[in-house]
Image 1 (tube, helix red, strand yellow):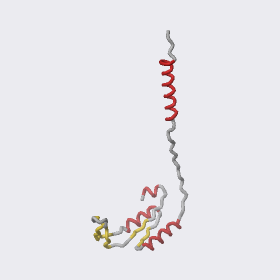
Image 2 (cartoon, helix red, strand yellow; image 1 turned 135 degrees about the vertical axis):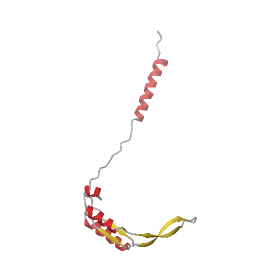
Image 3 (tube, helix red, strand yellow; image 1 turned 180 degrees about the vertical axis):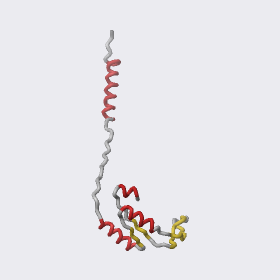
Image 4 (cartoon, helix red, strand yellow; image 1 turned 120 degrees about the vertical axis):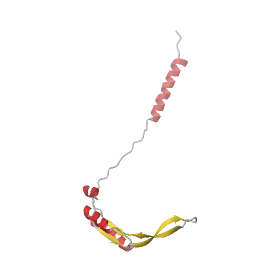
Length: 121
């Protein structure tokens, strides 16, 4: 949260689900289905609130999919910020055909000089 604050990034935290017990997959059966185990779920609302307040954002609580969708819509309406995008361009190596042609011409020159067009003393 402190790092986000340094860069003026607002963090909107969302506590999703409900406290209590929830099914969580813990193993996969041979037929591809999962076995579920009820595990205790506790949403740390104090920490989520603290993160949101530190960065100038807001904490939301969503207990259902409809609430989560409305929270997303609200966050989307809150602010739009312009971002600067840096495009990295990759240049490919294209010297290989020219290097091969130069090597072949050099080999041809050596073959002509020392074999075909050799002058006798």
